[in-house]
Length: 456
Image (cartoon, rainbow, N blue to C red):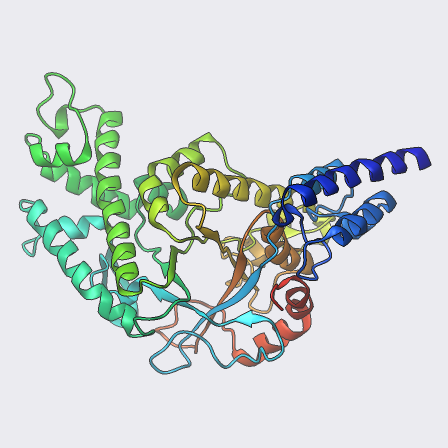
């Protein structure tokens, strides 16, 4: 056993020395003193050889070869910022919360979030108290007469007005010289038909869009529409009714992608043009798929390569879907439970995809800033805030959201949250307030933030 540990130490020493000789930035700051030096290697060698929890770099509850490999191949950054991207309806004319007591914690408020409802040309129709009547990108193609006869003119007019009104929305919150982080949170509409189907499960929106495509191409194909979509009709087929179900879905999906991506790109470009010094990204893009990425999910990101090429930040949501622990029977939501290794694999898969997308379609200067939350996702069964208003994420899920992004190469983490008052206009059953969240941040999150954040 002594010989095994010695060999292990010598091997790590060689790897660490090589990392230091090659590039100081490649040396992971494992002791989180905001310096990358040989002391990090020595400390990790000691912890790993002794099997201490400190060497459990991927936080899967084990000290093993995965941690050894992670140290050698680390993407961890020396600089790692924690952002406070908490929105609030408690502050007049603003959404960034300033009432939570974060004094003494190394958390940056140099960030802002814009919600889709702030943009006047969002394709959503609402009733009293923000009740939803209809949503979807088909609305941009529809005329005031309720038809799609002049879909092209309707679309161009919508896009022109959206581009013209976006700067005023942006400058309502920050000055033109603002140079912080900007998050665009668009969730009512998405750029791909498959996302509406698989992520949102919005069959009503899909039916509206497919109905619009059918109307435009009945009784015969609209030449401009099929050209826009890049769709080649089968030989002898002259209109929508002659297509098979799979061919109809193909035309619908391709056209959706063109219109959806254009809307997202227009918003991004106008925001960046208005705030040329800011760093802008979309909430939830690229998507954090549970439990891991596969070829089909990677293919969706490939189709959005134009959008990812222009984003300054990749901002996936890492809100926790599962209660992570070692005993399913002890979980308050056993139907949404996973183990630390399973949860760590989710983070590893997500960040491997972020690196792939950036390397294949993006730029070296693009940053990764995922969004974390003190609550579980709404889909988390009995752990959902809609089911249990008092529940916050457990210690394992808290640490995973803060620490695993750093280890896998993120530049920081943005903590999201929402404060509001009960009432018909409030969209959720749960209510968070600055006082209780102040306690949460200072007692449970604070020590981890203090240790991770660099600069302090």
